[in-house]
Image (cartoon, rainbow, N blue to C red; front, top):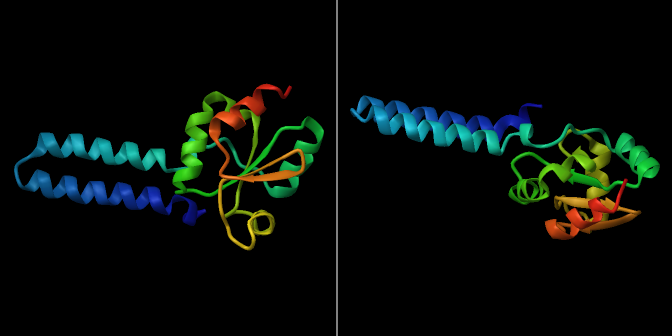
Length: 145
């Protein structure tokens, strides 16, 4: 769990240090604005922007039942954030699996990507897609119940 929040914590801490230094230098207004930017960035890379993750076994069970894709991701991954943001509300229609929380999910991703932990990896109808185009995935989600 700590590993998932590390990028966000590091960004927030950096923002706090820079803001404290600017405040001590007499630039309190600029420090406040900069701190707000850092905190917004920390929130953007946090696990909060992703739908609730389930484990690999549960995601596969649900995907078999409803035909929705399983998206393997990890916190701090810029490509995962891009996919999540571009899917918008449709992101909740997929089953999200955090590979840092589930060793079985990590193994699944490695199997699909020649031993690499490349995310996002999407499994749809038994076929895996590495870093798919968000527009394509959004179209696939629209055809599902």
